[in-house]
Image (spheres, rainbow, N blue to C red):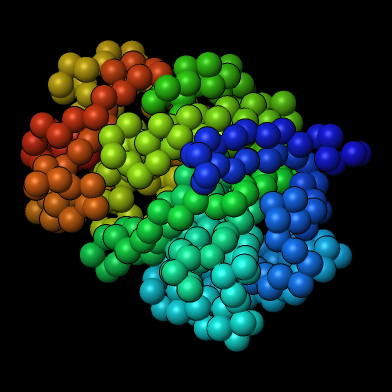
Length: 371
């Protein structure tokens, strides 16, 4: 197959910070060529940040392509897990950048899921006051969400992503072949973000998911729907990011399901749920809030619940103390003047940003989906 001709492109339009999201089977082989087109010259130093579980499948393929273009490459492997997304891991990347003598003309490449992408992006944002980063996501969740938009960072013991920076990549290269080695649970977690795009603004995508009989694995999703998922999700996020790069207002809709999802991740010490699983539960709780406020019909909440169930995602949480939930919400990074902003659905394809929801109502909504 002629890989280059198979690439689909979505542009994130941000003026001088614009970049392409490129999608194609076997695209990983083209990364060296693509970054050469961006102006990085032979002899430039490149640090690839990844994890063993990913690098064992794709590390050598990536490094070979970079070396063919004359780049001086180094591979850094970090431990897996959300609990590794912390300042200590950033120090490891900075130390590798120092040892490999990365300069302002150098490049960091993130090869992996959202955790690696967030950390590599933040390290790039803070090394020499900012060097280039390229995102090469290998999980469905990272492909449709985490790799796009320039949000980078790490967790603080008090909450998720409290330490970070906006740092747009130079390129996002999506090779859907890498999903063949992704565990089914990770595939399902990624589908939560796809459902999110359907609810917040793409009813066509939501309908496509509903019409598909099985959604629990890459084989069941199939090539045609997978490409539609990747392209429509990338385009949806690109539109929102282009309109609101630093989350002044509109971009907050991308947090649908995340505010209460982050509470679940924090209260379970990032051990019980994958990020997408927590987002799915957060969307259900947000839907319950909308029902309380009369913002959307019970039929739409049922459609949302059914598609979450069909994707094999959780629909019930453990019970938490109300005060624990309250404290987590008040430490959310999106709190303004003590008010928590919630993204609430008004129909499949439309949401509102609200800051007038009481914490008691949010706590009740989360409790309503508990076991």
